[in-house]
Length: 216
Length: 139
Image (cartoon, rainbow over the protein chains, first blue to last red):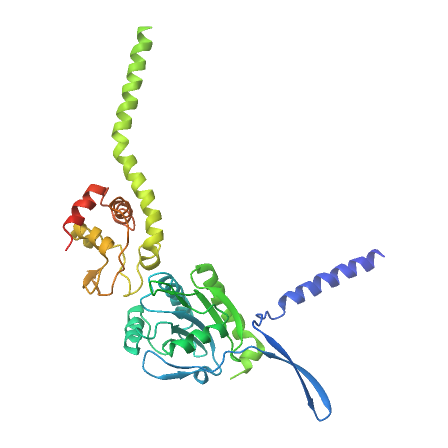
């Protein structure tokens, strides 16, 4: 009996260790729809996850950027405007550390949608990027139609920006992590350094997921 | 009895002397502490927790020489904001706008006491009177 207990304990300990070494994966957020398909008489079940819909924008270099340009990319998105006096400077001070961590990685991108396209022209965004010390194509600052960007923000699961009486924009300071299949895999408060460190760690976890590594 | 009275008077004098010597220091500490809260609420978003600024977008508050040279202008900057003015801070050019605030002179004095005695700066107390005098001369 004693031997049996001993063996059980060892087995349990071993399985516990094995469980820990299994690759960690991030959750998938958003709505999901069950999908039942019948192919050649065989019924298969699958899940359709919420994905980021198509969008049409222009980046700080004047290049046209659509969601297609982000195919096969893991990316972090946020919403901001260049004249924002409240949370944007903190958000982008924190986003700079994400930029520093992944600027050499061609498979990771950062996109910041302006919610004030009237003021934030391509030239204004370029100047902002330059002053922030951003070069290359890792971090894009995107200008699109205001209504479309506001609508798009809902797909990123953040509340749409609002304007108060003083015409100041009210918006969330979230960073949203999107995988290569355009599914949302994490949201982080961009004003909190600890959350941003978690984002950096999560990007590394996400990159190591088998279906992310396999997707081109 | 006599000894008791003398030592009592001595103690009283010492206490008074101590209190007087420290009144300035206490004012300074009060301004500094209140100023740090005003800083967090009004300035920190852009200028940073340690006054480090943000790249070439927001100037740092660590340039003691700049703060000393422009001491009389600092209340004006805070009260009325900065628009289209080129400033050289830490040998870098900044030309962005800074929003105005609705701080009272006493609050400006407190936040300036905090800023000009933090982040490696050491300029001493800024009083509400200093601020009012400087504000009267703002252009």
